Length: 201
Image (cartoon, rainbow, N blue to C red; front, side, top):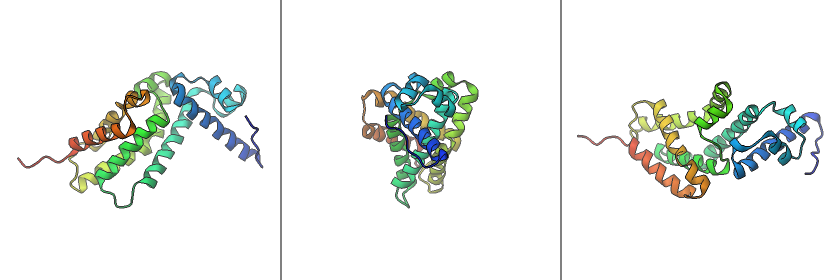
């Protein structure tokens, strides 16, 4: 692994932190975040464990930083890929597609497994890191209700349900049983049918 060259200590720390998080991303594609050890990350990043612990004192802190990075990437991708003026249904399809693509690019265990692995305090902090992504979905649902495209009784609860349906495709996607395209079409159609306004009785 080549040495990091930086003009200042601050730049060096930023580059080293970025190298560590890139190592987590690469390892997550091979063995999943739940199976990654701090030693694995240090070896993959080309640094010592002592250096790694100077940046992240434990695995929970490392996963929190990684999750925040992925969340920022998702939001930037969402804003970049969806055209201005897209309908709520189109935005929801885009949200589903990007979420599923993220599951493949950054495999990670489900919420229950993360809660067990990190403990309640760290898991709560993790939930706070992904809150911006959940707000994107809430905004889509609210705009759909206003446009008359969706019928939603409880926006927050519905957002959790949509994320759960997306999460249900985690294992088939990671195992290669389905493609992002196929899963995206399946999930989007399921969700949009569930949100469709009832016809007049």
